[in-house]
Length: 276
Image (tube, rainbow, N blue to C red; front, side, top):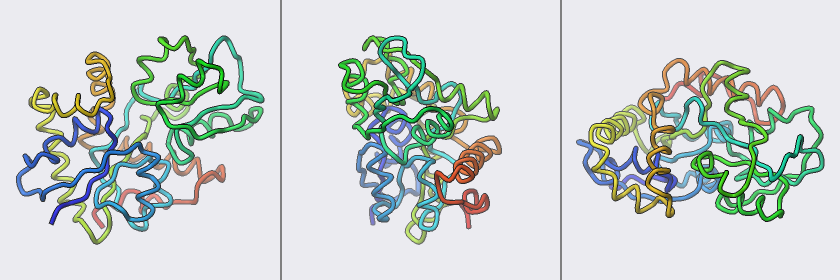
């Protein structure tokens, strides 16, 4: 029976999961893949739509009753946080219309934590690929962006008002928890799934050329240099194992957000007991 997997088409996900998707991980079942932006997978996971699924860490409070958090395969790191972009020299977001890529994305949760106590802005959920062009054209006063936009926003004539990753790291000393991999309870053994993903990561690092065609086929016309920089930034030691620092970052994010009333309270044991 095939395993249903949902990931984004972004280079970090296709790079990490190439071996698993293409049947090169010994002992792993066949995989049927759905490619979707994380805002879509966050919603689909609430319906229990997939056996393995990439979601935002910000969505965990709504998902951990039905899914195990896996300690590998996701996106955490340093120097890789979301950016708030504007056109011109805007000093703040008072009265601004801000385009965001999803209301349960980690980027938006970090934005809400950062902007607490500041003058309110009007929020619009916008497909990710429309955010930078929309800000450049004046449809939005600011945009919250992630992933490869870190490398390309200058081309749109935009300026970074704040790097939310830098803010988070300076405030906590912890890496930035962005995207998580979950295994549906009762559908897949989380220990086995973690083993398959780690082997897929190992193979990706051992010979990056093997996944090149697959990665580029889903890279949405990204330039090769941007693809390589994207993978280099988002596929790192936390992809192979969250470790103590990774789990501490997840706990800090969810605890802060719950204290601020932005998400339901999630017990630390629920967020880390992925083998239970």
